[in-house]
Length: 318
Ligand code: FUB
Image (cartoon, rainbow, N blue to C red):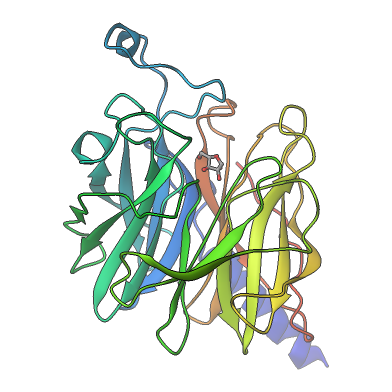
């Protein structure tokens, strides 16, 4: 018994000691992290929050009421979850052929790898400013790029918060969506990852409130759909919930909360990944800036119960 206790203590202290102090990226503001493991390294692909520049208004840019401002994306890599390397800008709004160059609102991106190639999906306003956001694609031969942006956005993927998931059989799925009364959706992606195929499925049976930021992973044959949600986009903050299914297209069964609401940061946005035999949840908070739109990526260990349910993650903030 004593030995088991000692073992648990050692395991706990190892997993606690091997994560950097949160937030893990401090030199720029980052949010909406997609974490992936490629070739033994852990990569993070977040949004890049910047302050609004009043000079842009003279050029014709319109500040959005929600205040999220983003002009490009960086990527990061680590081998030890202590030292993170900024790999620089991988996609910039000024280079998006189909995009509104004065939109300054490149929200949550995601990435997936198939057949040795890397597919980076990102939302942006179209050049004619029609609609809310479209989702575009940039491709690369390596996880750090260089990325080549496709000439057009992907037809049929209007919205935000793309999450590409590739199943064990190679079939890719795109989950996306965000907004009040705007459900999360899923659709299959074509073999070349550049278009959608088949019918879009609206994911039902989730709490009837604002939802965004879907992130799907698979563990022991079960598909876990995780997502931030809140009751009132003006007054409350987001908790991170999850639902499970035996099929990537659902139906999903809502299971509960992974991370509670923050009192002082309106959004949260997660990804969950296994790295070196430990599961982690990446998320964001505004603990450096204290401002809702200048956020910082954090990470904490995540644990599963015997029955496959997810133990609540208590954020270790700054
Ligand atoms: O970062 C901008 C938006 O805020 C994202 O698209 C949402 O998921 C929320 O984090």
